[in-house]
Image (tube, rainbow, N blue to C red; front, side, top):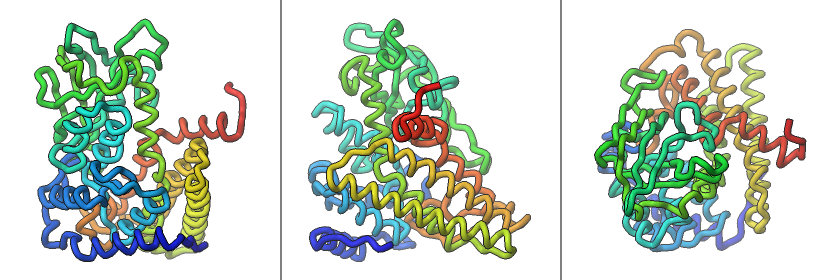
Length: 391
């Protein structure tokens, strides 16, 4: 399968390739590493600001927000060229890809200026406060409350799994503002600076390493947040949430295709079983790129098929997880070594993608959870793609 693009798209690609060849940070510059998904080293902040100022950070955005009004096909080749060089788009991915994007879609002009642009230019970083104990994938089950008191909201409650919260400057936080309304209709969204009195962040390690601190518990105790920090209408948070995840999912499949390509390069089959597993990875990789390219073509024609993205999400995330498990098994007990390297290091990428095989396998589970769990995606596929009735 070979994708071809019109001259305008290829000219766009050529301009970006020229920019990268002239401006891409060197390995020596990129020595300092990110410690969490909201910790952006100084060299990476400079690089992100250059991308923003040059219109290459989020090309679909208008120029004042770090883009150049790119089409979806131009966005695709932009990500493709980053992938070829193993360049991570931003070391604050939720801040750039979800939070700033949500502010541009639902925020006021002041919020765009005061919060979105600084996030996009890496002057501040942001984390997403959605999941709670007992309300992980079920956003409508959240219990963190915000009560209006004059010109502020008073927030009390808890979030968990809040990636990078201890390094973030602001949290995009989903709260319940009307406890009497149906669950999905009483939710609002607040921008809460992390230095606000009453905000407590407690990072905790993942299963990978004791010093792998990205996840957080976040507690809100009488936190007073200006009404001006409300994103979208009061009790309109469900729409903002769907838009936030929509920003995350549009070309999400391409990230899984990249991970598969990495696995094809790093997986070393030895036995007949290994070779069979490797062949499965090859077929899954082609299938994902075929289905993803078809979805890309539909979107380029202006056809909306959002439920079909769930098919790509399930296929990509689960194929990566399965192939990583097979690769770990093929290595044997040596794959349990940590720290270790399983792929050539890429200074502008995350260590997650070249660390030891056992860690790569553990991290593959994030793909079946983040951006909507596989269980939720299967419900969407059953009801909105296959037209099956609710149980």
